Image (cartoon, rainbow, N blue to C red; front, side):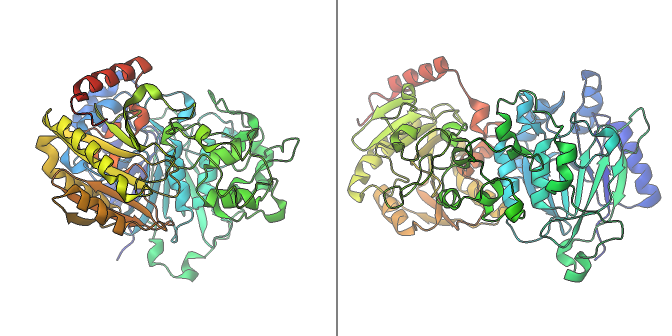
Length: 596
């Protein structure tokens, strides 16, 4: 099988006519090529180019070959996302891109997929610290890619909107237009090719060796389409997929290979001049987390922790590392404690953080050090977002309180009347409560189901059980009755696309469902389950080392309801006044059905 032939292009800025005219010319003279990958900003940067751009999106002009693009911002981005959400082919998980029109695919957020044997990872958009409301990647996107560094196999192509400062030539080495988060990701993922947009220049760096890996990485930076300096904006490569190469083939180092630009010794000279990103409220002492090559000064008490060591249990710098390799903190992270809590003494993600916000096994293992300015023995109820005794609980969202459970409207709801059923006691999942308390949960479920049915809707319930979830929450999301029959299929399709297979079992009696669920739950594994309107239970056990999204249930239903932009709760935030009004409206309609 011949190696795939790939075209690469820089920032397009909506100049699709010029781009595809050039692509057709190259394809005719040197092709055929299998695909085009565009980096940098793809969407128009001004309204004047909107009509040209939408001609392709709406089918009046044709895209000449399969085209994949990143860069989640620009004039047409929200409009195109709205159009894509109406396409049934985009339901569920689309790691290989949202289909915008024939041959045009949008790689949003971050992900990994295979193209003709090539392993491809991408990070789309700009850093959220730049103050943008649309087109930014989140810390969750970064964390998902960082986890890839722990997976087996070599990544062939790493595609990012912007370059790392370490990649661009010295004459263009100011920090504007570069992204310091890329440094850490590329250093850990080690793609064979790293492709990015760069400051309107074409730059092919010498191949460089990777720490702890035998293969080299080649960086390619591409200029923008139609740039005034006539810099090269299109380039062709034909990489053999690493999965088909022998160990000796993949370890070949060309004669011009250099050391990695991400090694500490090489970087302290150039990257020490990097300024803090605009709008970044973190102190300089935390900035090192986003650029592994920037030397972080130890605090006066010598309490700086090595991110790499805590996250993976090892550090390639060994004794030369400038940060502490603290086994206590590493063990706490392995038990599911929030990494930000360990490193910064606090977590800024709020109630949607999937990690624990109290240190584990304190009674058996008395702490020997402090985290940040807070004591490791802090009362867990004071840290938890769901404990009613916590000062952090948002009590204005509560709609009903029972003996063992309470109900609240969700923060950043997927849809109107999105409800959480939460144990009053600080428990990691709903199976921890004794089975004798199931009847209360059943009454709540039945009341909510009837409330939704009176409004021509059906309830979908799901829970993610993980060692990193400290306080359980069973989510109840209403879907239109007309969509209810499709719920099992969409869950199964989304799981299949991620390489998982859901176990399905149908029951007529809800108590039987809960009894069976308890037999499926293994406290040594992560566990997802969903109860769909026809009485079917869908379950999945996930090993601790397997990658699975904590918000899987919400993301799948967002796809079903054609609202992919609402899969992230942060896109759905309401003011406190709006939340209070929604609670009062729900309570008024629910008061005759409320079992409490």
